[in-house]
Amino acid sequence: MKPLLNVSGLNAWYGESHILHGVDLTVGEGEMVTLLGRNGVGKTTTLRSIMGIVRRRKGEISFADADLMKVPLHRVAHHGLGFIPEERGIFSTLSVHENLLLPPAVAKGGMTIDEIFELFPNLYERRSSPGTKLSGGEQQMLAIARILRTGVRMMLLDEPTEGLAPVIVQRIGDVLKTLKERGMTVLLVEQNFRFASKVADRFYLMDHGQMVGEFPVSELSARMDTLHDVLGV
Image (cartoon, rainbow, N blue to C red; front, top):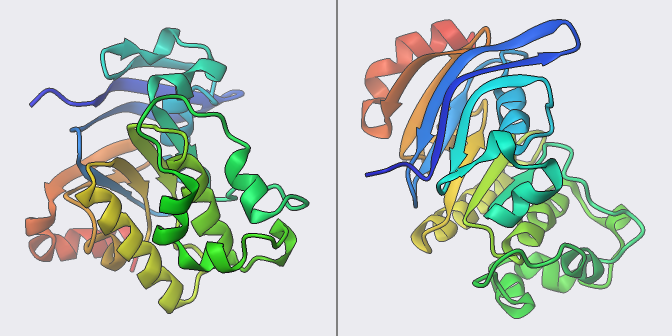
């Protein structure tokens, strides 16, 4: 199967700091793939480089036959790729409903507001609340929901469970499973491999700006010694 996203030989820099050293990865349509690795190994930089937020980069990035290395940052989303950063980017003075309406639709097939509220009942209950009144879990739900309305084909999701209570982590996992059943493609950055094991099809293991392993979820148990060594858990 031809991958929906293909990254080959990706290098990236922040100033003079060389962060990514020849990253290779693929994600097939409808797949949920997780990048595992400790803090500072380049996981977030990989997502930001795919989106074009990191401007000093070289290599190949293709998405749905588009050469993203040639696409301006403000046009990447129009190719059907959405990014949900770890900081979530919620507009604090706007209500939940206003936050949902803010991003423009980039393609047909995005969820309606009613469908989003069905998927996220908490957001319906808080629809008139400003962003400043939302819990961390509610902000994460809103950040995901806001992207789903735009009609993107694939989400890049950075550390969605960071700092959240276990019951909210479980809810986020349930949402990702539902999106997977609906055919959404996801590239997920996550340190909690126990959470990721419940939603991911495949894993890439990252260390020092490079991919040092790739395996399907069925091999997770057999790879635990390697994961403990690389992740330091």
